[in-house]
Length: 474
Ligand code: SF4
Image (cartoon, rainbow, N blue to C red; front, side):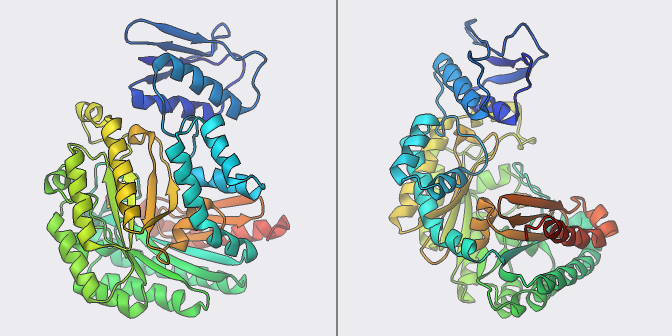
């Protein structure tokens, strides 16, 4: 089945493209064509049936309305209904929070999600519950906008996972340049620490991610953690979170855990993704389920009491029973938070075409997503932040669940875009949030470029503040 999109006079904005990509999950290919006889969309079915849509009359000028019009008509024609209806974009809870802030009641917001956006009631409920669990964090930030977060990126991993969409490079390839990277990263930390002092910013969280920070050697890793502690966390009277993404279980050692404990790291992620070895091999993780058990044991022995575990619904070759097995093992490990991802297939360039077709088993993925939600909430975990990506299997979402009191403020604020986040290292994206305006500064992505131009990166962040001052929106 193919959707052809034409440009009758006006060029639809990216929301329209996003709305059409919803149907990618139903196996529909999107093709773009130049302007043609006032035709907006032609959907050609595999059975030869054709749906042709002209622009709505009277012309819909609001993109939200146009997206809804297209979604509803194509949905009727194909019989495909997305769980989130025609809701596009990365942050469903941001829409919910905006509606609630505009004095809409919970039932009005639910009705808008299920009515206007055609989302399933279960998704509307999930978004509302997640928003409710964020409420206190958003209120605190609104009361004191000088609170900020820091992100430090380590763009190296032991191997590349087939679905990876992050800045990640082979640690083996860059082994000889990691010391140089850490030296320049420390210089960027010093410059940002000075900016934090000058601007009287209140540092609430430091998040070290990547990549896989624990792919560094023990001495390099200890140096990184000590630098972050010396320049940021030990200097802040407002610190609530010092997180480290210890993602690959096989890269976690007792020595690295000791370095984190000594420096005051209070939240780590150990990410199994799945507890099935055959899948781990298929997705290029190069570790085993046993490595996850060992990493949890080591971390618990050292007293870590806030551990997150990432898992993925819809991994290649996984049927429902395999996913249930992952949840069974996680129950025995009892992480304080579990982030349930839905596989995003577009990025899975290494997956063969046939595998991709096989992956589009939205019913299975939907059952996995629903089962994770039920089992985790039964254990007392609550959804507290969520986001969506393009090309997610079954058009579902990523949700993090945690026991009350184990929320990561950093993750809430980065998703809701209500807090200034200063990002360091290759691939970091800083956001300066002021009322009604978000300004961004991008660090270069490639390691080589970062090594050559790292001093520019701190200057870019400083410029964010100077621009805000010039515009009177500090
Ligand atoms: S561990 Fe994360 S950052 Fe590294 S390759 Fe896998 S998905 Fe990418």
